[in-house]
Image (cartoon, rainbow, N blue to C red; front, side):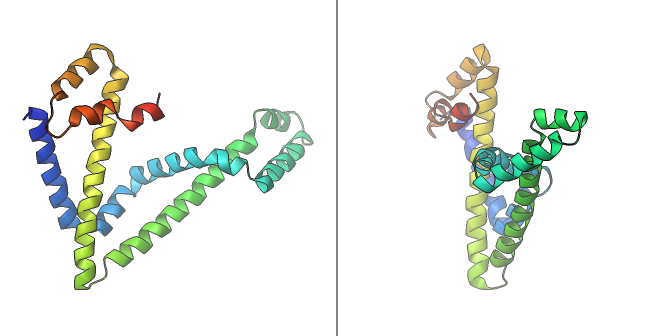
Length: 182
């Protein structure tokens, strides 16, 4: 076994224990609050903005907004020319996503933290699974950062993972983030 395998096993144990100890509700609250929550909302907005802008009533609203801007003078015309309506739509979508995210997290947290033996066990199991998923996401992000650095640094990093018993080299080579951010 490689050193990377031992590090991965240690991280798996730590994250699994943290997940079981904290539970799904507290873990979800932590990873969707503050900067993490904002990042999640930005990613959701990025992935859905094109779809939202293609909805017919949104197109109509943007067209009416641009007409209104063109009728208001030079500064407003400049704003219409740079498609400020799309920026406003993105901001409104971000606010909606933030509100929905907070509501969903509160509901899920309230459900899994019911003081009942069944829900306590479910909370611990889901917490373990959630924290392990977070660990995989962190590993993929680290692999992506090395791919961005590229060159000899990436080659050395990848060569240190080759032959991994936990198939870390395969995970690094087939990182789904590479195709998203390329």
